[in-house]
Each structure stands twice: as C-alpha cells, then as structure tokens.
Length: 170
Image (cartoon, rainbow, N blue to C red; front, side):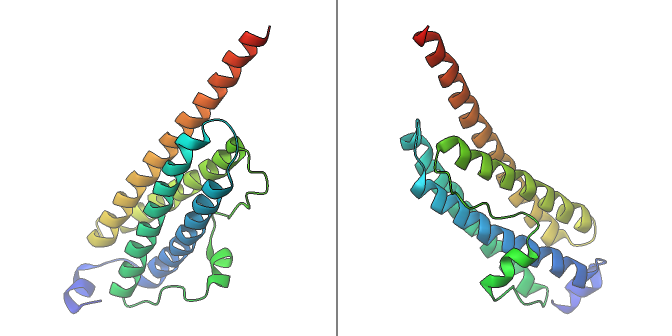
C-alpha cells in the first residue's frame, strides 16, 4: 500500500486481508458453481436461465479480479492455491449433484445470500477507514443483491408455472 494510503487508512490491514482472501476464495467457488450448474442444468426454463447464470458466473469472476487487485494494492498476497479456497471460504461450494433447475437455483441463492453477508461485513469494516475497499465492497454487494433478486424471480416463476400446471391437470 502506498505511504499516503497507509496514513489515511485506520483499518486493521491484516484482518482486512484475511476477509478479502476469504471473499476471493468464495468468488472462485461461486464462479465455478454458476458455470458448472448452468452447463448441467435440466428442466423448465433452462434455455432462459442458463445464459443468465453464465452472465452471473462472469460477474463473479470479475469480482475475483477486483478483490485480488485490492489485496495486492494493500500489500497482501491473494490466495494462491485453489485447495485453500474451501478452507478459507465461509460460503460453501454446493456440488450440483441434482441438475434439476430448482436445485441449481436454490444452491446459487444460498451462495448469493452468503456473499451478501460477506460484502456487507467488508463494507461495514472499512466504512470511513478505507474508502477504496469500501467502494469496491459496495459495488460487489450491489451485484450480489441483483443476483439474489434474479434467482428469486426465477424460482417464483417456476413455482407459479407448477401451480398453473396443476390447475390444468384437474
């Protein structure tokens, strides 16, 4: 971190780097969870949801780039071994063993809610202390909130579709 950045920052850098490396690990896991889930997904609305999940995957990769860059700017080292991702991450990777669209979406929704908590914590930790990291956390938090909203809407659409289908059968 630059000298002036050190002077204006009143945050515990070691704690922040720990939080950011956990977030970085979670972003890599989220990227893969979205990507592989989109590829394996089966069921109604797949053709509509799959490309959107791939967009989400790319956004998670973009978050990983932002977080890794910030870790470097703070004088830290981004987690360098993928085997450490699951050790550092609080947000787990859920293997998409059931490729049904609702299962994939529920797994991704769980991940987004965990990510929302992570970035809210980083934003709170850096508020008024490290403006650059705070701004990055808010930017990513907004993306995660949008992802949660997208997934909830798809789940609601699927629920409604099933309800309408039941009406037709009786």
